[in-house]
Amino acid sequence: MAHIIFHIDVNSAFLSWSAVEELNKARQEGRTAVDLRTVPAIVGGDVKQRRGIVTAASIPAKKLGIRTAQPVVDAFRLCPDLIVVKSDFGLYRARSRELMALLREYSPVLQQMSVDECFLDVTELTAGDGDGQIREKALHLAHEIKDRVHRELQFTVNIGISTNKVLAKMASDFEKPDKVHTLFPDEIEEKMWPLDVGKLFMAGKASAGKLRDLGIMTIGDLAGSDPKMLESHLKSHGKTLWNYANGRAGDQVHTERERAKSESVERTLPHDCIDLEDAFRYLKGLCIELAGRLFNHGYRAAEVAVLIKYADFTSATHQRQLVTVTGEAADLEQEAHALFEEMWDGKPIRLLGVRAGKLAAKGDPVQMSLTDFAKERTVNARKQKADAAMKELQDRFGKEVIFRGE
Image 1 (tube, rainbow, N blue to C red):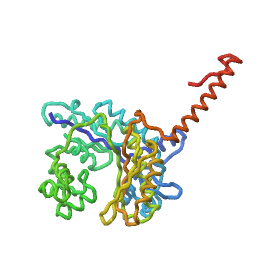
Image 2: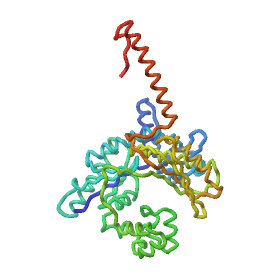
Image 3: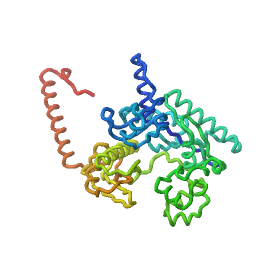
Image 4: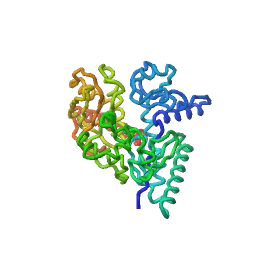
C-alpha cells in the first residue's frame, strides 16, 4: 500500500508568530494592534538602525519584491513605510513545539525538518477501499488539521499531500497561505511539469541556470531529458533532479533524526557582495539559522567551517576546531567572522555558507577546555563556601533557620 505523506509548512513562520504574539499582548492590555501579516512587515535586522537582513516577510511585503536574506536597507527602498520587528527565537521555538505536539496527536510518525516544517505519515489514518476513498480521507484530514491549527494556535499552515516526501513538499509550495494541495503521481504531468525548472525541490539557482543553458526550461523538460546527459553536466545531482522531476523519491518519514556528522546552512546572495560589513550581516543570519537547527536536533558543534562561492564560480572553504562544543549563535558567529576574514580575498561573493561539524548530542560527554574547567572549579568552590556557611548557621540556630532552595 502506498504511503500518504503530509508536508506541513507554517506560512511566513517568524512573521506570523511575531504577529500572533503582538495581537495577544494588545488584547491583554486592552489596546488595538495591527496584524503584521496584513501589512508590509518583516522580521530581522536592527529595528532602530534598519540594518541586517530580512529573515521573514509578510505576504504584502513579498508582493512588493521583498525577500528573505535581502538586506533590510534594500527592503526599505522598496517600501519606506515597512514595519520591522525584532527576532524572538525563544518565542519561535515555543510556537514550534506547540505545533509539533498538536500534529503528534494525529500520528507519531513525524519528521521535523526545521522549526516551521515537518513531514507527517498519515497512511493508517487514511486507509480505505481504493485510491478515491484514500484521497478523500487525506483531503478531509488535511483540512481538519489546517483549520485546527488556525483555530487553536492562531497562525496558518500549508499542507501538501502525496505518496512521497518530495511530491508532498512540492505540493505545499503551491498557492499560499492557508491552503491544502495534492500532488499524487498521476497529477505530476498536469500540476508540476509546466512549472519553471527552478521551482523543483533542490534545484538551486546555479543548477537551474545550468539546466536552462541546456535548453531545459520546465520541470517537464527535465523529466524528459536523458539522465546520463544530466549527470555529465551536473554530476550525481543531475540524476537526483531527474528522479525528483519524475516524482521518484523516498517515502519513509523518520521519527528520529539519524545522528548527523554535520549541519550546514548556505544561501545564494541577492547580489554579489563586496563589502565586509554586508558579509558579516549575512553570516549572522546564517549562524542564527544554524544555531536553531542545532537546538531543534539536540546537537552542539566542535568544529565550524565557512564556505565562499565567488561570482567567477570558484569557491573556498576554511574550518577550525573549537576549544569547546557550542550550539550558541553568538559563538558560531564569532568563529565564522574570524574564518571569513582569514580566507576572503576581496573578490565578489555569490554564495555564503556556514557548517557545524563534529556534532555531539547534548547528553554526550565532551572534553572540557581549560577555561570551562576553571569556571567549573570556581563554581564548585563557591558552592562549598556557601555550604560551609549554611552548616555553621544551622549548628548555631537550628536546621530550620536556613536551608537550600529546590
